[in-house]
Image 1 (cartoon, rainbow, N blue to C red):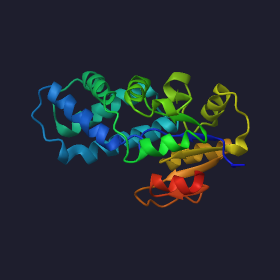
Image 2 (cartoon, one colour; image 1 turned 30 degrees about the vertical axis):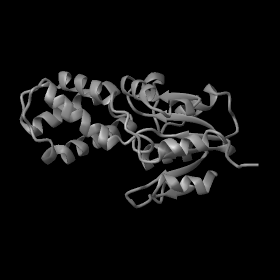
Image 3 (cartoon, rainbow, N blue to C red; image 1 turned 90 degrees about the vertical axis):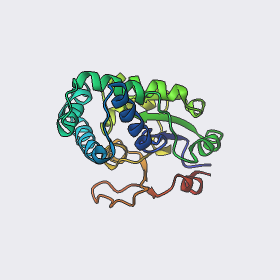
Length: 229
């Protein structure tokens, strides 16, 4: 009998190509606002701002509503454009919700896994974005449910979101559950603190934290075939 029965997947950066979606949404927002602006020199800067804001959110230092606006307030200051942050944030999320780009090989992999395992999608992303992207995606039928932190008021790495997910599908055997995700600070830390196995998707070969050592570490999603199939 297989050790694992229920697979919890992170969304952005694990199944969805968030870098591509993010660039798409930023470029479309600037076009909508009629700004003749070259994004490339500032993209890395925005991503650094965004990452810091999400880290603060994971630590409970800011609310999701503050995150939505403040990251663009900081970005607009950096690019020295006269744009209202709330408008930028609203249009960015509209365009991001349409960008359901998958990482290469994901659809085929999930099609195979869904025949052998129960699967849930567990994300800290924004409900407005994730619900629409999930609905537009060809992978939607492979998952029993989509659990979004904004909708339930608790986010990874808080063990409560994992508990909520298992309760949602009436599952209580932690020993046969594993979380697969690209974030040490939310997916892997959260899984460890909840007491389940973890698989860190680490395509950029980052250094693993001694504090949060995953059960498995992979550089390519194709490696999941060797673990689960």
